[in-house]
Length: 621
Figure (cartoon, rainbow, N blue to C red):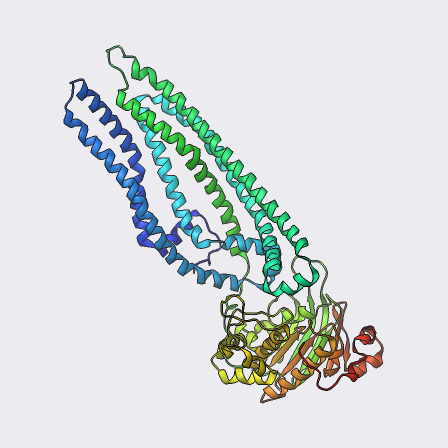
């Protein structure tokens, strides 16, 4: 499988390229073999043409001898010109085919990587660098290898011809070119290191740009007037990245000119060495180097100087750059993955009788403190639970464990008495449905934004419309220009946006259409005032009961740092110091006068007027 290997190298990339576009590889291979010998042939033909022309002028040769080499020279020029056009068209066609193959594989690979890697920014940077234009890199490795081969063949051909004329001149040329290769190679790593740092800066710049231009932040930009401050932050980071890249471009130019100048100096030395052989006759009275060969070699030397100035530096630095890229790619491929992470939920919805946490201890990878330490709790079907605690107590962590996002914990999570780790990914996905505080606003139409809550049955319009009625979104749908088919995103030209309260109801509607027996609300109503939040939870508890044929086959978990809504729970679990410090009903915990009672008292001002609210209070702000 593409992206399935644990180690990638140059040969691996070439093999992948061949497997995906074999016809293109064969054509380009033949092209490169032909093109690689043309410069050497060109030197010989130029020498013959000039010598034939001189002989014809001096009446020591036939005029007809001029035309064969001239014909070959012109043919080489035309081949070089048109073959690049054809290869450009071939690259476009091959690139499109590769993209069609690679992009789904990329999505599958990224989806399979274990969740914990996405919560570490260094790992995210590695993923971004490894997957950035991966499909272009596949073709780039092939073109880089054979582009370098063409240049090397040109240099070797020149050195051989030069050696046949003056063997020690070829050695001088070879030795004086070595520093150019070394300098270019070292520069390649520096360039990649800079790009690695720029990945982090670019991410921050992109985030700030989104704040400054995004639709979701427009109200706060106007209200708080932070645009100037954020503009300065954006400008500073953008300028930092721009200057860093400008400095790198300047260094690249210096390296190129340095390598080019070294090659030019090498060429001048060789020309100086050739002049005596072209001017002064030997003991037999003949010059060792004909005027044609001398001219052809001088022309080739200046051509190689230009090549050394730009192409050699580019090829060698790009070679080193790609070696560094392969390191990131291989790091990414070493990330653990769940093979079935991208699977759909199991169509057979499991019965849910109980959930038990037994001595659960967990800390996030790369950190020392335990979020949960010997945590124990048991949840029974047909009941509503509230999990509370201070920020960072581990409320959301429990959600991540029970939904299978993290499996690196000590202890057991038992579902119906069976260890969660023994369930398949499809079964775990079928077990639970979650609405998070930062739930997704999908750039889809209204219907699919809700139907996506049940990926196995997205065409069930009756279920979606029923959820809309239950959650109180019917009026909002009636106002949409295309009703259910209206794109609710500003990305599309005919799209509209919903209010914050309407989006919250869309997210809750996803939960209603989802048949999973475990429903988790992880502070999706944090943007509401405390009293409205309590109303939402009260209504949703009733909805869950109405929506299940077997009311005893479901568990609802409310997670909140605000405690007014927890009065509605059958049982409240208070997390403190990594354990279930207190459990019980609202009245039991208040009477206990412990952690929960203290927390509730500190928030009592939020709810003191709750009983004075009219029964018709708008639930969704």
